[in-house]
Image 1 (spheres, rainbow over the protein chains, first blue to last red):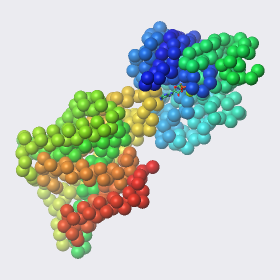
Image 2: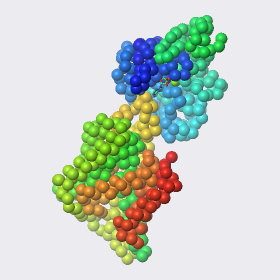
Image 3: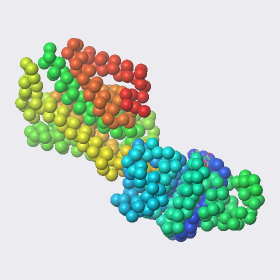
Image 4: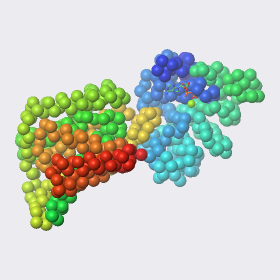
Length: 233
Length: 283
Ligand SMILES: Nc1ncnc2c1ncn2[C@@H]1O[C@H](COP(=O)(O)OP(=O)(O)O)[C@@H](O)[C@H]1O
Ligand SMILES: [Mg+2]
């Protein structure tokens, strides 16, 4: 479904992605893990067209995405949940959801699905997004991505800064969303969460993917965990 | 005395509402495009000048009130597409560029419209008694139209899809793009809307002041003062500030000549900025 190969991205003169290659297949939940600053966020931004790729290709359902203006990418069926949520703080929760339906009206069925995952969102509809707690904001951010009825969702550290109990809940919801047919690329710094829910996991290091495997393969490859993620096994 | 005060207060409110429309346009453009639009006053002047031509041709003020802002809106469209788009995100360059646009528009007006000030007859000539004085009905109508436009703008921003996009772009432009909002289109229409508001105020002001190629100069400075005192980016702060400053100026004019009364408005600005550098309603 999404095929990224040899992507190179720069911030000014500094190269951040050195030929990143990864793939998300139809219906998959794929994890992307790596230390802080290795280029995970940049990888997602490259897919969204928010950062131009100077080399390589990004194919989504066989069509090239590189060069498509950023605002047209969501229309192709990809939604983005950015690191740090990035809700519009002065808009209400309802407006934050509405705004993601660029093509038209909110689909009531989709809205019900979101309420199903996050009953809190329904309670907070009229409230300004900036007044919500971190966990609630994350729920709205995920809801905002889903309301556009994407085929693929890019999630950037959705559990960052949340209480352990919420981390678990968000992880389970991400899995539930995937089980209903949406493909997901999930970025996390914490391998443990990914191992529990992902079909496959990529490990990133200095702007490139250095390891690919299923959770059980990673589990077995202790050296990999130690080398790239400083996980003490 | 009572009648003088009543007239001063009414004048202050009428003029304040016109100024509010001008400042709204300026503030809207600043909030979305981060452009300090030095040409805003010239667009206001163009509105008045165009309306003078329309009235010369047709004798119909109300037609001019519709046509002139649209014509200026088209000019705004061309400016945004042709010039400002190419220097996006370079604040200093845009200031110089819009300053240049202002000079060009003023010079064009001088060339074709001429250097002498011209008057526009009150489209509604009636007056009503106010204590022992007579007050023009037209001014009340002008105030009512300004207020109606502001209500319409509020509804547009808060009740329509495009308005929602505009509010979102102000808050987080990058995320707005990532959600599929065509930010460049939003920029373009915001600039057009700001230009239309400036021109519309020009037509509203035309029967009160005289139409003159330099009329945008002072207005621009006042509009900047209002936007800064009200708080950059806070639209409704601009409206309140415009009315307050105009009232101060109007009431001050009872005691000193109007040009000196500007000192009171400036004093008010200095006071506010000393206490709240971010403006009355700024964050
Ligand atoms: N806006 C930016 N300008 C310049 N450098 C940046 C910018 N954003 C990120 N970087 C750099 O790019 C590298 C990768 O960042 P990022 O993709 O955010 O990493 P991650 O999400 O894996 O933590 C880091 O070294 C970071 O310092
Ligand atoms: Mg990151």
